[in-house]
Length: 157
Image 1: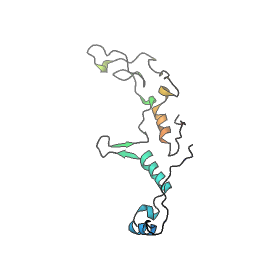
Image 2: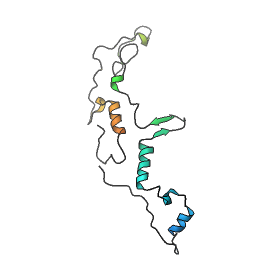
Image 3: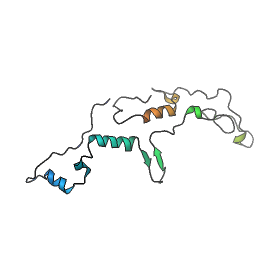
């Protein structure tokens, strides 16, 4: 876990003097500011970021996507992929290679050969790659909170 915390501005309380603003005057001028009422501090900023940015729902007011939840709750589960003939894939990883036959009517396509594409191949590199179920990894990623990620560390899997 990272131990460094982002710095916040904590203004120094000053008296009214030549060249100095005077805290009491600023509080009087901006009395309704959440800064002066104690509503904003490092903990409240952290909580607001967690709620609005990490856990919140993005709403573009119908411009493009409408609402989008960052918790990845709609991530697909490989086990839920319907397979077979009639235009369905051979598995969650590959399309059905069987020709649809004369007329190219996908509804008449037979199911893929037994065992075809049922196990994904290992991907190059480090990690689970194609073996990882999006539903599982998405749930792990969405459970993270502010401060869970550290430089050089990886924990979703």
